[in-house]
Image 1 (tube, helix red, strand yellow):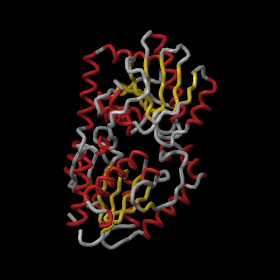
Image 2 (cartoon, helix red, strand yellow):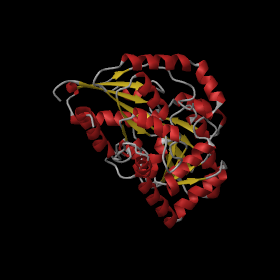
Image 3 (cartoon, helix red, strand yellow):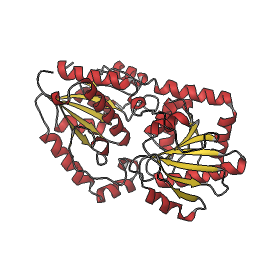
Length: 396
Protein backbone atom coordinates (compact mmCIF):
# COMPACT_ATOMS: atom_id res chain seq x y z
CA UNK A 1 0.00 0.00 0.00
CA UNK A 2 1.43 3.38 -1.03
CA UNK A 3 0.09 5.38 1.93
CA UNK A 4 -0.41 4.25 5.47
CA UNK A 5 -4.09 3.48 5.90
CA UNK A 6 -6.17 2.90 9.00
CA UNK A 7 -8.71 0.33 10.16
CA UNK A 8 -10.82 0.60 13.30
CA UNK A 9 -12.12 -2.71 14.67
CA UNK A 10 -15.12 -2.54 17.01
CA UNK A 11 -15.97 -5.75 18.89
CA UNK A 12 -18.48 -6.57 21.62
CA UNK A 13 -17.93 -9.86 23.37
CA UNK A 14 -15.45 -12.62 24.22
CA UNK A 15 -16.18 -14.66 21.09
CA UNK A 16 -16.22 -11.50 18.97
CA UNK A 17 -12.82 -10.47 20.38
CA UNK A 18 -11.41 -13.86 19.39
CA UNK A 19 -12.73 -13.46 15.84
CA UNK A 20 -11.48 -9.88 15.60
CA UNK A 21 -8.01 -10.82 16.84
CA UNK A 22 -7.85 -13.63 14.27
CA UNK A 23 -8.74 -11.26 11.41
CA UNK A 24 -6.09 -8.79 12.59
CA UNK A 25 -3.39 -11.46 12.89
CA UNK A 26 -4.18 -12.74 9.40
CA UNK A 27 -4.14 -9.19 7.97
CA UNK A 28 -0.66 -8.63 9.40
CA UNK A 29 0.52 -11.81 7.67
CA UNK A 30 -0.57 -10.27 4.36
CA UNK A 31 0.86 -6.76 4.75
CA UNK A 32 3.70 -4.92 6.45
CA UNK A 33 2.87 -3.66 9.92
CA UNK A 34 4.32 -0.25 9.04
CA UNK A 35 1.85 0.12 6.15
CA UNK A 36 -1.22 -0.10 8.34
CA UNK A 37 -2.55 1.52 11.49
CA UNK A 38 -5.08 -0.56 13.42
CA UNK A 39 -7.18 0.68 16.33
CA UNK A 40 -9.42 -1.63 18.34
CA UNK A 41 -12.38 -0.60 20.47
CA UNK A 42 -13.61 -3.52 22.64
CA UNK A 43 -17.14 -2.69 23.79
CA UNK A 44 -17.28 -5.53 26.36
CA UNK A 45 -14.40 -6.49 28.65
CA UNK A 46 -10.86 -5.18 28.85
CA UNK A 47 -9.52 -6.05 25.41
CA UNK A 48 -7.11 -8.69 26.70
CA UNK A 49 -7.18 -10.52 23.35
CA UNK A 50 -5.53 -7.54 21.68
CA UNK A 51 -2.77 -6.69 24.15
CA UNK A 52 -0.15 -8.83 22.41
CA UNK A 53 -0.99 -7.45 18.95
CA UNK A 54 0.58 -4.33 17.33
CA UNK A 55 -2.65 -2.34 17.66
CA UNK A 56 -3.91 0.67 19.58
CA UNK A 57 -6.58 -0.27 22.13
CA UNK A 58 -9.20 2.43 22.63
CA UNK A 59 -11.85 2.84 25.28
CA UNK A 60 -11.96 2.32 29.06
CA UNK A 61 -10.67 -1.01 30.37
CA UNK A 62 -13.72 -1.78 32.50
CA UNK A 63 -15.07 -5.29 33.06
CA UNK A 64 -18.82 -5.36 33.58
CA UNK A 65 -20.51 -8.03 35.78
CA UNK A 66 -22.85 -9.34 33.06
CA UNK A 67 -20.02 -9.98 30.61
CA UNK A 68 -22.07 -8.35 27.85
CA UNK A 69 -25.41 -9.94 28.73
CA UNK A 70 -27.07 -6.93 30.37
CA UNK A 71 -30.04 -7.20 28.02
CA UNK A 72 -30.81 -10.73 29.26
CA UNK A 73 -32.29 -9.59 32.55
CA UNK A 74 -33.05 -6.54 34.65
CA UNK A 75 -30.73 -7.84 37.37
CA UNK A 76 -27.78 -7.98 34.96
CA UNK A 77 -28.58 -4.49 33.69
CA UNK A 78 -28.72 -3.06 37.22
CA UNK A 79 -25.39 -4.68 38.11
CA UNK A 80 -23.77 -3.22 35.01
CA UNK A 81 -25.22 0.22 35.69
CA UNK A 82 -23.80 0.11 39.21
CA UNK A 83 -20.40 -0.94 37.83
CA UNK A 84 -20.26 2.02 35.44
CA UNK A 85 -22.08 0.99 32.25
CA UNK A 86 -23.21 4.54 31.40
CA UNK A 87 -19.78 6.03 32.02
CA UNK A 88 -18.14 3.31 29.93
CA UNK A 89 -20.59 3.82 27.06
CA UNK A 90 -20.03 7.58 27.13
CA UNK A 91 -16.25 7.10 26.90
CA UNK A 92 -16.67 4.61 24.04
CA UNK A 93 -18.83 7.07 22.11
CA UNK A 94 -16.26 9.79 22.76
CA UNK A 95 -13.50 7.55 21.39
CA UNK A 96 -15.56 6.76 18.29
CA UNK A 97 -16.00 10.46 17.60
CA UNK A 98 -12.31 11.16 18.22
CA UNK A 99 -11.21 8.30 15.96
CA UNK A 100 -12.79 9.75 12.81
CA UNK A 101 -10.27 9.68 9.97
CA UNK A 102 -11.05 10.61 6.41
CA UNK A 103 -10.08 7.34 4.73
CA UNK A 104 -10.45 4.98 7.67
CA UNK A 105 -12.37 1.74 7.32
CA UNK A 106 -14.33 0.43 10.30
CA UNK A 107 -14.80 -3.32 10.79
CA UNK A 108 -17.64 -4.03 13.24
CA UNK A 109 -17.81 -7.53 14.75
CA UNK A 110 -20.90 -8.26 16.83
CA UNK A 111 -24.51 -7.11 16.91
CA UNK A 112 -26.63 -4.29 15.53
CA UNK A 113 -26.04 -2.21 18.67
CA UNK A 114 -22.37 -1.60 17.88
CA UNK A 115 -23.10 -1.14 14.19
CA UNK A 116 -25.49 1.62 15.25
CA UNK A 117 -22.89 3.17 17.60
CA UNK A 118 -20.20 3.11 14.93
CA UNK A 119 -22.49 4.33 12.18
CA UNK A 120 -23.86 7.29 14.15
CA UNK A 121 -20.76 8.46 16.00
CA UNK A 122 -18.03 7.60 13.50
CA UNK A 123 -19.61 7.02 10.11
CA UNK A 124 -17.55 6.36 7.00
CA UNK A 125 -17.02 2.99 5.35
CA UNK A 126 -18.09 0.01 7.46
CA UNK A 127 -17.77 -3.75 7.04
CA UNK A 128 -20.14 -5.54 9.40
CA UNK A 129 -19.85 -9.08 10.75
CA UNK A 130 -23.28 -9.88 12.32
CA UNK A 131 -22.09 -12.67 14.63
CA UNK A 132 -25.05 -12.40 17.02
CA UNK A 133 -27.70 -13.74 14.66
CA UNK A 134 -28.26 -16.56 12.21
CA UNK A 135 -31.21 -17.67 10.13
CA UNK A 136 -30.82 -21.06 11.83
CA UNK A 137 -31.96 -19.42 15.09
CA UNK A 138 -33.91 -16.31 14.25
CA UNK A 139 -33.52 -14.03 11.27
CA UNK A 140 -32.76 -10.32 11.47
CA UNK A 141 -35.65 -8.00 12.21
CA UNK A 142 -36.78 -5.47 9.64
CA UNK A 143 -35.20 -2.62 11.64
CA UNK A 144 -31.90 -4.52 11.77
CA UNK A 145 -31.86 -5.02 8.02
CA UNK A 146 -32.67 -1.32 7.59
CA UNK A 147 -29.71 -0.35 9.79
CA UNK A 148 -27.40 -2.68 7.84
CA UNK A 149 -28.44 -0.97 4.61
CA UNK A 150 -28.01 2.47 6.17
CA UNK A 151 -24.65 2.03 7.87
CA UNK A 152 -22.85 -1.05 6.46
CA UNK A 153 -21.19 -0.96 3.05
CA UNK A 154 -20.57 -4.71 3.18
CA UNK A 155 -22.04 -7.42 5.43
CA UNK A 156 -20.20 -10.70 6.02
CA UNK A 157 -22.52 -13.07 7.96
CA UNK A 158 -21.62 -16.27 9.77
CA UNK A 159 -23.34 -18.77 7.45
CA UNK A 160 -24.62 -19.23 3.92
CA UNK A 161 -28.26 -19.35 4.97
CA UNK A 162 -28.06 -15.93 6.60
CA UNK A 163 -26.22 -14.52 3.59
CA UNK A 164 -28.98 -15.71 1.26
CA UNK A 165 -31.65 -14.06 3.40
CA UNK A 166 -29.80 -10.74 3.57
CA UNK A 167 -29.15 -10.80 -0.17
CA UNK A 168 -32.86 -11.40 -0.78
CA UNK A 169 -33.45 -8.11 1.07
CA UNK A 170 -30.98 -6.26 -1.21
CA UNK A 171 -28.20 -6.00 1.36
CA UNK A 172 -24.66 -6.05 -0.02
CA UNK A 173 -23.46 -9.33 1.49
CA UNK A 174 -20.82 -11.98 0.89
CA UNK A 175 -19.87 -15.20 2.68
CA UNK A 176 -16.36 -16.63 3.06
CA UNK A 177 -16.89 -19.20 5.81
CA UNK A 178 -17.25 -19.22 9.58
CA UNK A 179 -14.30 -17.41 11.16
CA UNK A 180 -14.71 -19.24 14.46
CA UNK A 181 -13.21 -22.38 12.93
CA UNK A 182 -9.90 -20.54 12.35
CA UNK A 183 -9.65 -19.13 15.87
CA UNK A 184 -7.67 -21.98 17.40
CA UNK A 185 -4.51 -23.97 16.66
CA UNK A 186 -3.82 -27.68 17.01
CA UNK A 187 -0.24 -28.16 18.18
CA UNK A 188 -0.22 -31.91 18.90
CA UNK A 189 0.32 -31.34 22.61
CA UNK A 190 0.95 -34.42 24.72
CA UNK A 191 -0.95 -33.64 27.91
CA UNK A 192 -0.03 -35.26 31.23
CA UNK A 193 -3.05 -37.58 31.24
CA UNK A 194 -3.83 -41.28 30.91
CA UNK A 195 -4.43 -41.75 27.20
CA UNK A 196 -5.86 -45.25 27.73
CA UNK A 197 -8.93 -43.78 29.42
CA UNK A 198 -11.97 -42.29 27.67
CA UNK A 199 -11.33 -38.57 27.06
CA UNK A 200 -14.27 -36.18 27.40
CA UNK A 201 -14.00 -32.41 27.04
CA UNK A 202 -15.51 -29.78 29.32
CA UNK A 203 -16.25 -26.23 28.17
CA UNK A 204 -17.34 -24.14 31.19
CA UNK A 205 -17.45 -20.79 29.37
CA UNK A 206 -15.36 -17.66 29.76
CA UNK A 207 -17.49 -15.54 32.08
CA UNK A 208 -17.98 -15.40 35.85
CA UNK A 209 -20.53 -18.21 35.77
CA UNK A 210 -17.81 -20.65 34.64
CA UNK A 211 -17.08 -21.60 38.26
CA UNK A 212 -20.70 -22.48 39.01
CA UNK A 213 -20.81 -24.34 35.70
CA UNK A 214 -17.86 -26.42 36.88
CA UNK A 215 -19.84 -27.48 39.95
CA UNK A 216 -22.62 -28.64 37.62
CA UNK A 217 -20.15 -30.70 35.61
CA UNK A 218 -18.82 -32.30 38.80
CA UNK A 219 -22.38 -33.34 39.67
CA UNK A 220 -22.79 -34.87 36.21
CA UNK A 221 -19.56 -36.83 36.58
CA UNK A 222 -20.60 -38.19 39.98
CA UNK A 223 -23.86 -39.38 38.40
CA UNK A 224 -21.90 -40.88 35.51
CA UNK A 225 -19.77 -42.87 37.93
CA UNK A 226 -22.94 -44.31 39.46
CA UNK A 227 -23.92 -45.62 36.01
CA UNK A 228 -20.66 -47.21 34.87
CA UNK A 229 -17.32 -48.48 36.12
CA UNK A 230 -15.52 -46.97 33.12
CA UNK A 231 -12.72 -44.56 33.93
CA UNK A 232 -12.55 -41.11 32.36
CA UNK A 233 -10.13 -38.28 31.72
CA UNK A 234 -11.96 -34.96 31.51
CA UNK A 235 -10.08 -32.20 29.68
CA UNK A 236 -11.31 -28.73 30.66
CA UNK A 237 -10.27 -25.94 28.30
CA UNK A 238 -10.38 -22.60 30.14
CA UNK A 239 -9.78 -18.99 29.13
CA UNK A 240 -6.63 -17.25 30.34
CA UNK A 241 -8.65 -15.20 32.83
CA UNK A 242 -9.97 -18.35 34.54
CA UNK A 243 -9.06 -18.09 38.23
CA UNK A 244 -7.87 -21.24 39.99
CA UNK A 245 -8.39 -19.49 43.32
CA UNK A 246 -12.05 -18.86 42.50
CA UNK A 247 -12.50 -22.47 41.43
CA UNK A 248 -10.89 -23.77 44.62
CA UNK A 249 -13.22 -21.58 46.66
CA UNK A 250 -16.21 -23.15 44.88
CA UNK A 251 -14.84 -26.64 45.54
CA UNK A 252 -14.59 -26.20 49.32
CA UNK A 253 -17.85 -28.01 50.02
CA UNK A 254 -17.23 -30.91 47.62
CA UNK A 255 -15.43 -34.21 48.21
CA UNK A 256 -13.18 -33.87 45.17
CA UNK A 257 -9.40 -34.01 45.68
CA UNK A 258 -7.53 -30.92 44.46
CA UNK A 259 -4.05 -31.49 43.02
CA UNK A 260 -1.90 -28.47 42.12
CA UNK A 261 0.28 -28.98 39.06
CA UNK A 262 3.30 -27.14 37.68
CA UNK A 263 2.75 -28.49 34.19
CA UNK A 264 3.09 -26.14 31.19
CA UNK A 265 -0.59 -26.62 30.30
CA UNK A 266 -2.30 -28.34 33.24
CA UNK A 267 -2.33 -26.12 36.32
CA UNK A 268 -4.80 -28.11 38.41
CA UNK A 269 -6.30 -31.58 38.49
CA UNK A 270 -9.40 -32.75 40.33
CA UNK A 271 -9.99 -36.36 41.32
CA UNK A 272 -13.51 -37.62 41.91
CA UNK A 273 -14.58 -39.09 45.28
CA UNK A 274 -14.83 -42.59 43.72
CA UNK A 275 -11.51 -42.17 41.95
CA UNK A 276 -12.75 -43.20 38.50
CA UNK A 277 -12.55 -39.75 36.97
CA UNK A 278 -9.98 -36.99 36.80
CA UNK A 279 -10.45 -33.46 35.53
CA UNK A 280 -7.48 -31.52 34.14
CA UNK A 281 -7.77 -27.72 33.99
CA UNK A 282 -5.92 -26.78 30.81
CA UNK A 283 -4.63 -23.38 29.73
CA UNK A 284 -3.35 -22.52 26.22
CA UNK A 285 -4.30 -25.88 24.76
CA UNK A 286 -7.81 -25.27 23.52
CA UNK A 287 -7.29 -26.56 19.98
CA UNK A 288 -5.70 -29.75 21.23
CA UNK A 289 -8.52 -30.32 23.71
CA UNK A 290 -10.94 -30.00 20.78
CA UNK A 291 -8.81 -32.44 18.81
CA UNK A 292 -8.31 -35.07 21.52
CA UNK A 293 -11.65 -35.28 23.34
CA UNK A 294 -14.25 -37.63 21.86
CA UNK A 295 -17.22 -35.49 22.88
CA UNK A 296 -17.97 -32.51 25.10
CA UNK A 297 -20.13 -31.20 27.86
CA UNK A 298 -20.45 -27.50 27.17
CA UNK A 299 -21.95 -24.39 28.72
CA UNK A 300 -20.15 -21.96 26.44
CA UNK A 301 -20.97 -19.92 23.36
CA UNK A 302 -18.20 -19.85 20.78
CA UNK A 303 -16.32 -22.83 22.22
CA UNK A 304 -19.38 -25.10 21.90
CA UNK A 305 -19.73 -24.09 18.27
CA UNK A 306 -16.06 -24.78 17.57
CA UNK A 307 -16.25 -28.22 19.19
CA UNK A 308 -19.29 -29.11 17.10
CA UNK A 309 -17.48 -27.85 14.01
CA UNK A 310 -14.64 -30.24 14.77
CA UNK A 311 -17.12 -33.09 14.62
CA UNK A 312 -17.25 -33.54 18.40
CA UNK A 313 -20.87 -33.76 19.64
CA UNK A 314 -21.61 -31.35 22.48
CA UNK A 315 -24.05 -32.15 25.28
CA UNK A 316 -25.64 -28.96 26.57
CA UNK A 317 -28.02 -28.16 29.42
CA UNK A 318 -29.16 -24.87 30.98
CA UNK A 319 -26.99 -23.32 33.67
CA UNK A 320 -27.75 -20.85 36.45
CA UNK A 321 -25.75 -17.86 35.19
CA UNK A 322 -26.37 -14.89 32.91
CA UNK A 323 -25.19 -16.47 29.66
CA UNK A 324 -26.10 -20.14 29.40
CA UNK A 325 -29.79 -19.80 30.16
CA UNK A 326 -32.52 -22.11 28.91
CA UNK A 327 -33.24 -19.68 26.07
CA UNK A 328 -29.56 -19.46 25.11
CA UNK A 329 -29.24 -23.25 25.08
CA UNK A 330 -32.35 -23.61 22.91
CA UNK A 331 -30.96 -21.05 20.47
CA UNK A 332 -27.67 -22.89 20.33
CA UNK A 333 -29.54 -26.09 19.56
CA UNK A 334 -31.25 -24.34 16.64
CA UNK A 335 -27.91 -22.99 15.44
CA UNK A 336 -25.98 -26.25 15.59
CA UNK A 337 -28.79 -28.70 14.91
CA UNK A 338 -27.87 -32.31 15.65
CA UNK A 339 -24.30 -31.19 16.38
CA UNK A 340 -25.46 -30.69 19.96
CA UNK A 341 -27.63 -32.81 22.22
CA UNK A 342 -29.89 -30.68 24.41
CA UNK A 343 -30.74 -32.17 27.81
CA UNK A 344 -32.87 -30.79 30.63
CA UNK A 345 -31.11 -29.49 33.73
CA UNK A 346 -31.01 -32.95 35.27
CA UNK A 347 -27.50 -34.22 36.05
CA UNK A 348 -28.51 -37.87 35.82
CA UNK A 349 -30.04 -37.33 32.37
CA UNK A 350 -26.86 -35.58 31.23
CA UNK A 351 -24.81 -38.55 32.45
CA UNK A 352 -27.07 -40.92 30.51
CA UNK A 353 -26.64 -38.76 27.40
CA UNK A 354 -22.86 -39.13 27.67
CA UNK A 355 -23.09 -42.92 27.89
CA UNK A 356 -25.55 -43.09 24.99
CA UNK A 357 -23.20 -41.16 22.71
CA UNK A 358 -20.23 -43.27 23.76
CA UNK A 359 -22.10 -46.53 23.12
CA UNK A 360 -24.15 -45.69 19.99
CA UNK A 361 -21.70 -45.37 17.10
CA UNK A 362 -24.35 -44.43 14.53
CA UNK A 363 -25.81 -41.69 16.73
CA UNK A 364 -22.33 -40.34 17.40
CA UNK A 365 -21.47 -40.29 13.68
CA UNK A 366 -24.74 -38.54 12.80
CA UNK A 367 -24.14 -35.78 15.32
CA UNK A 368 -20.47 -35.48 14.36
CA UNK A 369 -21.31 -34.91 10.69
CA UNK A 370 -24.12 -32.49 11.55
CA UNK A 371 -21.77 -30.26 13.55
CA UNK A 372 -19.20 -30.18 10.75
CA UNK A 373 -21.84 -29.31 8.17
CA UNK A 374 -23.30 -26.45 10.22
CA UNK A 375 -19.93 -24.81 11.01
CA UNK A 376 -18.08 -25.48 7.75
CA UNK A 377 -14.41 -25.98 6.99
CA UNK A 378 -11.48 -23.98 8.31
CA UNK A 379 -9.87 -21.32 6.09
CA UNK A 380 -12.31 -18.40 6.33
CA UNK A 381 -9.82 -16.07 8.06
CA UNK A 382 -7.47 -15.96 5.09
CA UNK A 383 -10.27 -15.17 2.61
CA UNK A 384 -11.83 -12.61 4.96
CA UNK A 385 -8.56 -10.78 5.66
CA UNK A 386 -7.90 -10.55 1.93
CA UNK A 387 -11.39 -9.11 1.35
CA UNK A 388 -10.92 -6.49 4.09
CA UNK A 389 -7.59 -5.39 2.60
CA UNK A 390 -9.08 -5.27 -0.90
CA UNK A 391 -11.93 -3.11 0.41
CA UNK A 392 -9.46 -0.83 2.18
CA UNK A 393 -7.54 -0.31 -1.06
CA UNK A 394 -10.38 -0.18 -3.58
CA UNK A 395 -13.38 0.83 -1.51
CA UNK A 396 -15.74 -1.81 -2.95
